[in-house]
Image (cartoon, rainbow, N blue to C red; front, side):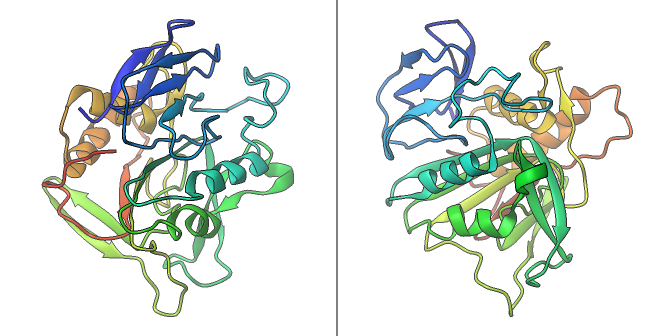
Length: 290
């Protein structure tokens, strides 16, 4: 299994976890539920209360649409998705990373794009994520995300990013983007010879994004029946729960197949999940393992 669902011991909410997590802190009631031991490292955006290399998952709400410091559930000011808090969480995720570490960066929220001023984008635009306070503090651009959590990744370490936002296809600025059509695929090289290096320090970085750089992403309540989440996040969870031992190619196609069914009333929406990576590989033979 590449993931599992457990229930919070405090409030009973479902918690989506990697298979060998030691414990999880519920985002709603703050209770910590213990699980079997693990050798993997997992952290989600907005910061776990554990120290680096401790295998404790802190679950967080996956969308902050219409949320704000005065009306969202989170009362801890350091866990509200402001620009400074997200930057701090990204630095925490990558600091002291060791060979054998498995990192997970999950963002579900608003995304945008802006003109590329340092000429390192093939399409002329930088992709961005938009924190809660982006209107006053500005977005976080892909160059910064790459420099913070991709380039420091040492040999033997692995990073998975799950980015559920508009215009997010290359938001980690990884060198290669996979273009898939049925059972055929090809890797497109995003590197520009005159631009700075965007790879890792020997590790492997992979990113699943909600859509291509020129598409928008949608939200849905179809998965939970109540809470609104990003359609990409919902399709990702659904795929890894329903099909153990997925390959990267199968996961990507399963997500793409599921998104239209999660938005039956939005027939005009075109949203194609994307896979990018720091190196190329056979997506239909390599097993997806966090």
